[in-house]
Amino acid sequence: MITAKLIYAKLITHIAVFAGAGGILVVSYPHVLAPTESLEASPVVARMVEYELTAGDRFALVGAWRDAIGAYETAASLSRAQRQLPTVALRRVANALYYDSQFLAAAGVLQGLADEAALLGDAETEFWATLDAAQLSRMAGAEAHARRLNERATRLLQSGRLDEREYLEARMEEINLKVFAPHLESR
Image 1 (tube, rainbow, N blue to C red):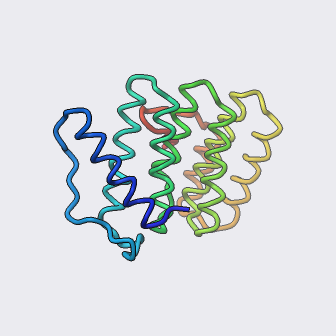
Image 2: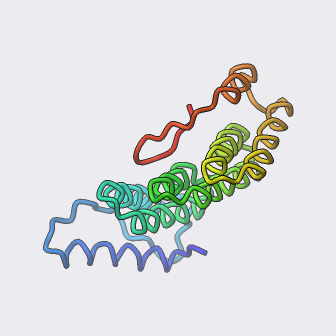
């Protein structure tokens, strides 16, 4: 679990990394996160999320998938600490796993995103993450799992919780996973 103390330590570590590398500190924080400050409203934590996403993107550009995944997972944890659904970070984790040919692991990340979205009532994110997880499962040769995920997406369509149902049904029929570095996207 992310705590204010851990975030403060991570902030100091990042500053030390910049200074230790002899580089210029390009990320500046307007104030230091106090150990008692609320993580949900902290602009420091929000900037740290952006920093981790950028770091992950830089690792991904050079094919350092494990480092990219680590940075994206940190961004996801920080987003959760701010009580936000980590859609961008988790899609980037899935993308890095995809490019590392770990299709089933990428599908698992997206299925986890769909589960989190369902708990928070975000039907659209749940639908697209489920559909993308199904496609990745199919790519990994897990046809039975892909069918179960497609059934979940179909139930979600029939629930009436999604706008533009006809459009989404048509997309489901012709779904073709599109990959744009550094994140997955279905639309």
